[in-house]
Length: 158
Image (tube, rainbow, N blue to C red; front, side, top):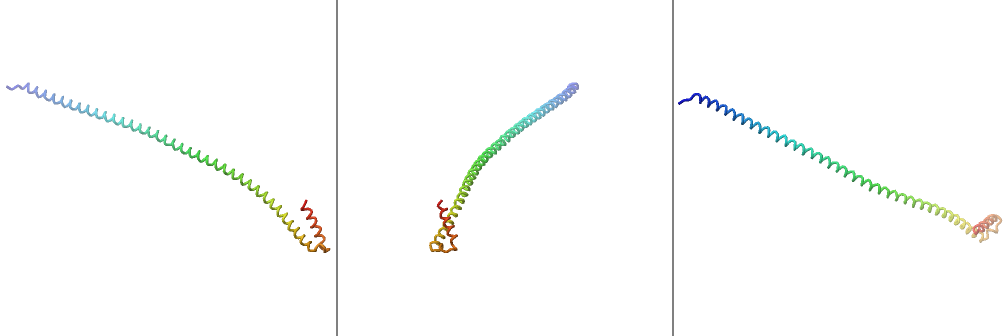
């Protein structure tokens, strides 16, 4: 027996079932899409947070590096300052020794000049002694020489 009402009803219910299945599948796919999108957004957010954390870490390391460089420059500067002070002390000592040496040189030159004068006077006395020993003082023209000789002899002993 043929039941037209049931077959139409069956077809209608089957269509409704197919539509419901399609809607369910579509909803599930939509839900999966939203979940995948939500997961992707969460992963991107986590990646952005990791990236920002790495940037902060980089800033901190750069600061530490620059501070380390400044520390080294400061240490080198202190070392150079100590060298400068040491060289300054050495320069001052050298200048003091130079001044002392110049003073000794001046006094030596002065003593040398006096000795040269004494030597010249001694040579003159020796010359005059030789001159007068051989009878030159008996000559009337040499009497002034003889008197200067006597003055020289007496002045060199006083």
